[in-house]
Length: 390
Image (cartoon, rainbow, N blue to C red):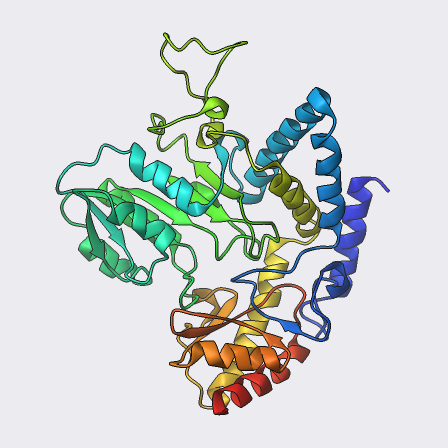
């Protein structure tokens, strides 16, 4: 069946799983390697693998094994992925690059800037380490901590020589969603760049990455990809002169062999983010994920998962269990988080009762994707309350 017809068929099937209608999954759970009998609500940590990705990885194995012709196909898949990711983020393909992780991409960016003593970066004290640590280790950079969910507070803190506002679109810790348009306005007034980590948003909500100067995202969560591959975006209109401080064979322009006596010419596009071989296997796997995800509009996925977050938050409230996640879906992501001193034990207890949630940083995190549905909410609550009581 042609790809366009296959996607139309999947879109039709998704429509039949109307997110405004009966409580059924938006995605067919049989498409995933879900553990038998378990409710999987840890998309913010790791998502299950699609069965179709096995075929994608088999295709990678064939191409990798076929010498120069196969290598040409490997590289073509990388360029095809950049184009798909650009369309996914509504930006030009030329701005998209691939890195191994958000931590690598953020480190490359931080290392490339001409920091001066007194330079200020605004960041939330609850921000993820991949964003903060490269900045914290840079001599002379002042980290100024401010709640990113309060743009007025960010504006008030934007005094002095502010070089950057660094923020996750959705917080990994409490699932708070940040107003990137408002933060863009603050950055513009301060003459600062806005750097965004979309990891906790990418795959379930529409993204318009052009709001950022630079943006990154892991792909192994809601994007249904594998570790070892992350998206990097360079807004060339906002930062036309940007260049990384380091490079490798893949990120430079060469002829048959490089002339090391001449100035090094970087690739003119986002390909300069990738210093060495791209993660080809993870690239093929992400194509398999996008084949699945592109059949369903991102806005439909967002409505589906946030109906589940709202439903769970209402049940928690009725049970007298406090959540640290903002109750308004306009201000939260696809997760619900509960601060708890025994978070690890509670998550283990939930797993023993057939519900796979996530723990860490002193909180329980329950995250939804399209394979979940409202019928799972009461069993989740039963497992949670039993584990908290034990």
